[in-house]
Length: 227
Length: 252
Image (tube, rainbow over all chains, first blue to last red):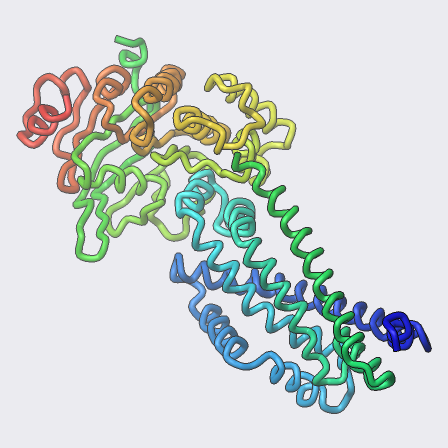
């Protein structure tokens, strides 16, 4: 079989490219929803932890957050995904929902520590300046500290979301038809591994390059005021 | 002598009674008692580590006192039930390191607090910012970011930002100590103009010229207590306290 015949067999015949298209859709959907959960929860945890670090307040919440971080960061993502799918949703088969939750909760832990490092890197004078103008602690956090922290940690966050995107490939463990699983479905019909897998790898690569480009653009925009 | 100094002093604005502050075993303030009246310009001087910055920062509770009382406009602000944020709206503060918000333009730095605290509409705050920028001589910097400004310009903007809240008193924590020598003058000039408008000011400073010329009273803090306080003309000519004599002989 020459190149075009193999290409046709793997992707054109019986519309097998649809396995990849559906896979891309699911992979992106999981990544986006998980990233949204990760950002939301991660920022909340980061602010709680940073507040405790700086002021000694919110002791109980900080303890809960630390426990959460320890458990999430201390266990493999695959195991977490399997637990959500087979244990928490044991009676119903909800692969997408399980993936949203497992990856979202997982990402939150890493986002939290990234954002916390960003908050802690902001000079204490910024908080003092905000407070001395009469702004409250949370107002100063929201209008003064977080915007600066976010800008500083954007490269690290980009990294986290790239990792997240690629890590969704373990969805194969719960038979969720993501991009990686799509390549395997094609292989199982055509007995060709090279073409589908290389195609899958190329698609991941393109998405990551796009993601990097977009975040880079955002970062440059946010950094305009430093010149 | 400026007309200001001859003016009758107003009512007591800040009343400090036996103020103490410890950092662990380190007793920084050991019972400071003084009153600051409306329209006064008080210069606080003293050797480094004497507690003068801690004293100033206690006045708006950036440092929480461990003993004593501070009354601001008759209210004991060391009382835990006091709304600290409300109180701080009336007390402007200018820092040694400027502490401008680097992610906001100059104008937005000035507008942030009045708008977010809903004391002014955006339009009102914008007008007030333009007015203040005019006053500190930097109307062309409205849309610049702090990183584009010189140290002196940053400090002038910081003064404008504090003024935007229409405070009853302004605290200055070594406002010219982080500046290159050639920029000290422009900041002191703005402060002098501010004093001439009748603003109550408390200034921690090493600028003896400013203390002598602009202040209505000079306070010498050493070892956590006020060792001497007097009108500048007396303060700088005849000192009773030996430590103050030594200090002035070194800095003058």
